[in-house]
Image (cartoon, rainbow, N blue to C red; front, side, top):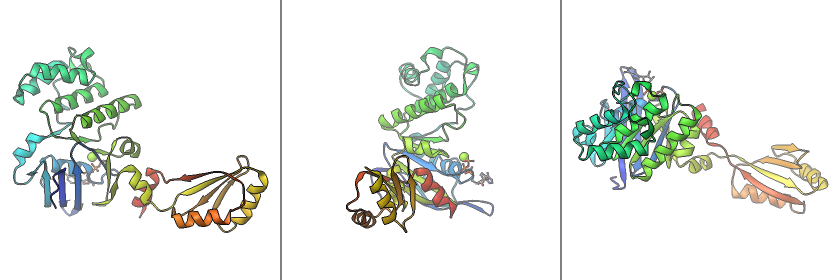
Length: 306
Ligand SMILES: Nc1ncnc2c1ncn2[C@@H]1O[C@H](COP(=O)(O)OP(=O)(O)OP(=O)(O)O)[C@@H](O)[C@H]1O
Ligand SMILES: [Mg+2]
């Protein structure tokens, strides 16, 4: 099915290295202007997938359409709409940030390289080091310059393979800001990560790659609600209600806390079970009730544990 809104369409993507099957039939649709996050453990096949999408590696079978172009049939056309960061990791250390940007701009035949360079230096908070040789830059500064260089050709889609691995917490937060700004400017961001928190912070859409297939996908919220289970936290207004409730809930899986007069009851998350719980506790003085959802980490661990 071709949906116009989907700037990336992947069908039945397969890739093996010798006899090792890495991708066993991946299907994905990614919306234009969104931040998509491919989440997977070490060796799951994230980089392999990014390389295929960025035309650096050939798939064994399947179809990948980027912005209407088939990666197999028209790789040149695909290259004109995408950008893969990391490709300028070998930026010329002797040149300054400004010189590196101008060089890439000229190589890309960009009109008005000077204005574009100034704009990117500002956007990536590199103005204050613009005239310093890149060899003197920190890891975070280099990575910002790398992304700025990837954007000079006005790509529609940008691939970021683990953009924050190895960055300190402050640089990571800065990178998240940059990623959000890129998406707000209309660029579709395809990023890979091993960090669940990163996916939750950034992504409109998350897909979990495990053992060669996408085992689940959706927004962080959707993934969390997909996982059956969770708990209801009940707080009681007085000690006698708290004790009565414990007796009533005999047989349920509960965690009690005498200090706060709360009882956490495990549920399957269904409305029916919640209604049942409230009906048997009718008459007790419930001061508050809170539904506790599974964390994204719980979802991930539950799914990959099988
Ligand atoms: N060129 C290659 N030849 C043989 N095997 C490879 C090659 N590239 C990757 N692999 C193997 O394919 C599997 C997937 O690798 P890939 O680099 O795509 O994983 P990844 O999800 O990016 O991992 P990481 O989180 O460590 O970056 C791994 O088992 C890896 O060892
Ligand atoms: Mg990788």
